[in-house]
Image (cartoon, rainbow, N blue to C red; front, side, top):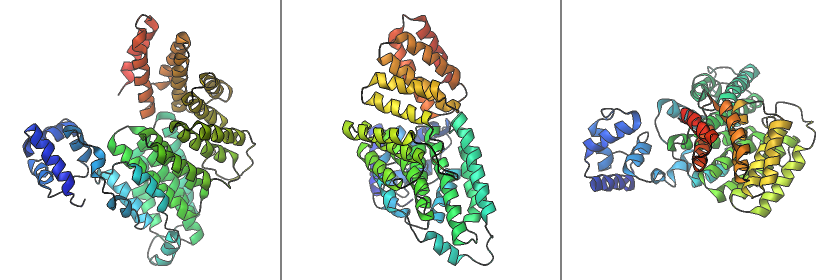
Length: 439
């Protein structure tokens, strides 16, 4: 990573305030990263303090032990500019960096919006013309293989959480798909290959986002989503493009980048505007409604929530393998319920969450666990303590074994809220059960 004197000054000043030299910093970083104080050599810490090198993998741990802002390391021009390289080279570099745990990237609001300017629309054509005669020949069989693997890994992650198989997805990208992306193919096959890879890269982003709430994973998720959008746009696939932008928008909501989330939500709706699949339309309209609700724009949220409801009520007639087909009426009901909860309409929120669970049903254990957790929270806000306790008991039954940051956050939220009900034996029992699940 290029030298950044401003970062070195921050590190040096923070160390001086603590009376630390390179040895103390190296020891603290080793403990923070792996629990081993001998993990990092003194000379590496000295180079960061003196500005001879700028940290990459170690930056989140430096920020942690010195109490620094993780986003300080973002270079305003250098970070987005780095993505204006060839799409395939860029995404493979990202995947290999992920596997090797190097070149740490921090999620930021500016990086998220910069994704809208990234696509290189000549990328597929240029690779078709420049492929060497000796490179690997790629056809529709390889494209089908990528799609099959995306479905297999996606099904596993949806059931058990993104933390279970993310590195399998990334290694598949860097070891199996990489030779195909760098091979010989027709323009039509190239676009299909880019589209399938966009799905795989999006899945890697979702897995990283669902695996944990660390600066490293947030940065990886954001970068994977940006590359997924770039690949989809260059493939000429508006549904995949909109879905990648949705990933960025949802992450911006989670990170508190409210204005950026609304802008990305609007772009998401715009890309999906002319699709024939009503589920896709509902998916993107609900994304914008959620972003607007988080931004306290009740008028916009209500308008786009109504558009989502209209779309999800239409029969699905579009054929083919739709990336948004998983957005069922049950999932729409869950998302709508949480938007309504944010807007303060708790009765309607409970009705929608009940609709998601008992009328439409949910086919994934992770999804059902999250909906049960949300329903318990809504019932508690309504003053229905008994109803909340019953729902949270079902949530704990469902959550066992799931590796998902959302499930972990729901467990912690439930434990905190139940502290005020220490007089209820059932509440204490739930808190003790939840403590065994919290990672």
